[in-house]
Length: 130
Image (cartoon, rainbow, N blue to C red; front, side, top):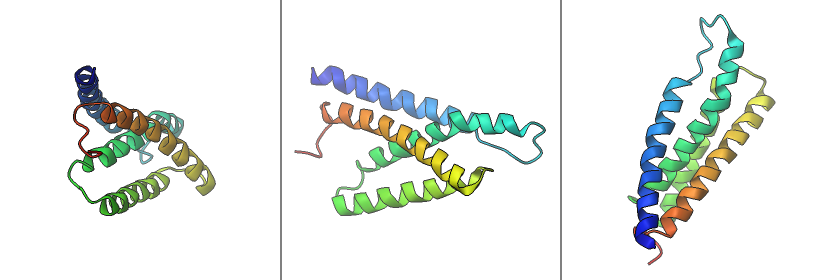
């Protein structure tokens, strides 16, 4: 059963990287020289969850290279904090709205991270716990 879950995990990560990269590039918000700013606001519905899911995937994958847990946690917090601040700055809403929308995107990205972690922990590749 672990071999099947390992195959599912590898496919999940591979498809996630491809699909999330496509969504982030395709729906990156551009407010300058935009005739219909509402369409840019709507693309944020797709962009932010994809952006944060991709960042949580980076947080997951960096743990393969960093073995010390304290350094791993510190780098993860720095990555997510910088990404959160960046997401607030690229939006053209009020500050409270930006924080709320970014928090929703961060939460959706965490769900993707949680699924990735569950698949990883049940796979053969899980050597972190051993």
